Length: 113
Length: 111
Image (cartoon, rainbow over all chains, first blue to last red):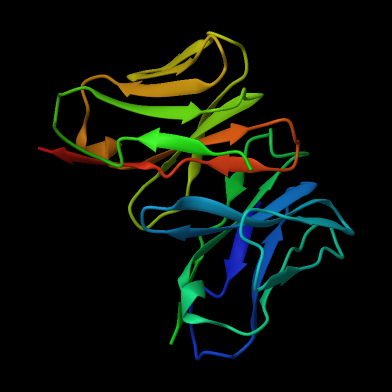
């Protein structure tokens, strides 16, 4: 099992550009989520999904879109990148819900100029 | 929304000293999870607490869940350089969808 994989590992964008951060898991987990990590702010939930076709907003959803067409994949889309979105992004998955052990991917470090 | 405060934000210790980080919520929690993130790495699950007053141990690590299920602590006895990293608590509220993390405590261990 590869676990949770994320691509790319690093990305630099210009303000206004759009891009998709990829996240995939091969553990047949129903629950997937996206967090951003900023210094002193901990991990903040952006969006989450409890199964294919079901998504919901977390604490900081503005500027981000998600979809869940398959159990395995949960991409995060930045519609029009802003410098405030410079951060490290982690995808996580768990068997059923947020109350199960979360398995985190290696992260994507995004810089928006 | 649910807020979880974690203190301290930073802790510097000499190797061999003890370390404790605290996680506090204003609302009753359904469960609390603890994660460790090594520098440059990703969070890795350590343990989950569910019951009021629960205490669990993993070698030198002791985890406690408060009687009112509003706070938790992680205590490391006799720290080692391998303990370096950021420790996060993740709190579950009434929803099964959201896990709210504290700000994390960055632990530095001086040899």
